Amino acid sequence: MFDRFYLNARKPKGLGGCLILARMNRFEHARLAKWGLGYLLLQKDDVCLDVGCGGGANIARLLRLCPEGKVYGLDYSAVSVKKSGRVNKKAVKEGRCEIVRADVNTLPFAEESMDVVTAFETIYFWKPIESAFAQIYRVLKRGGKFFICNESGKNSSQPSERAKLLDMTVYNKDELERLLRSVGFTVVHTYSRDDNGWLCSIAEK
Image (cartoon, rainbow, N blue to C red; front, side, top):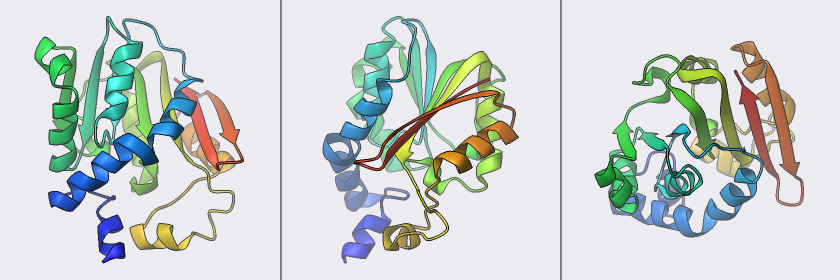
């Protein structure tokens, strides 16, 4: 039963998915996201896209950091899209936020339409990841930033039991930088917090 509950973290659905998203918003992802965002310099009018938006907590953070901008959220889980809409309903009503259901490998946005794209604890599930990164590169404006915030994989060749269960790939610093540069990103800054195993990368187009 425990395994079935956490398997729902990959693509939340049903009541279990709602519970997972609520937990992520309040506990599991919150501290990591706040730490990582300390490295991301945003403009007040930036247009942002949060890919794999989950429960919508990071959309709310981006809206606060870009009070004159707009934030899009994207997730392939219908439960996540609905939850993110509820969490950010005021901004959605005002036209400052829009949440769509889609896959990262087929982003429904025009070329060079985003100032910033964020991905919080979600690239583990992107397959093929090179295709997903290429899509993000496509929608970013020249000079735009792709911000990744997740746990690090110091030795991703030996995945943990949780990673095996969820079919996750946890990338280390060198792997991430290589993948980002392979699709065209030219500047990559990486920050880590070894005591918690946290990692964030900022790639510039």
